[in-house]
Length: 214
Image (tube, rainbow, N blue to C red; front, side):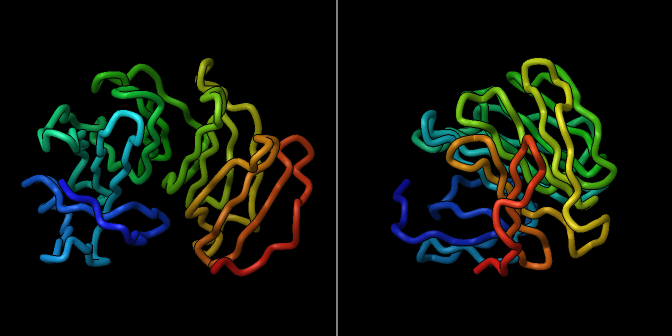
């Protein structure tokens, strides 16, 4: 598997492109690869690499049609794990360790998985969970959804710690991408309307005026 030097943007996800294994699931998602290894922008799901483990997670964001998740070994190009996600279409995914991960779904729930077994559920959003981010020490999780909300979770306790709303519950305020700030005390979010927002997680104060993302 030879990785290209360039990256492609799919939704809010940037990843290094590579010729994939012959995956039935990837074909079902509508992912089309050209001979030069680049990917078309009609992909309806996620591809998330685990840099430390060399694993690739693929999943669909098609409600009521596909609730399947696959984990591939990128070195051997073999399927390591495949399972359903409790009949919910997972729209976001983050790694914790090799086969330990979290999914955010269209049923507004976050699920903690270990070797394909669901070990816990976190509830709090009222719509699709479109984005998630894990803190550097993997103690905290940020989640953002189509409800315009950002929530902070204690992963160990599977419990919500705090919540804030970015501009109200409208389609254009859907949180498409999230990240912790470098000091882990704040968050940065990109909404569907294309604006970048920054907040202190303790005080909820804006870190900077909302600006268009580029």
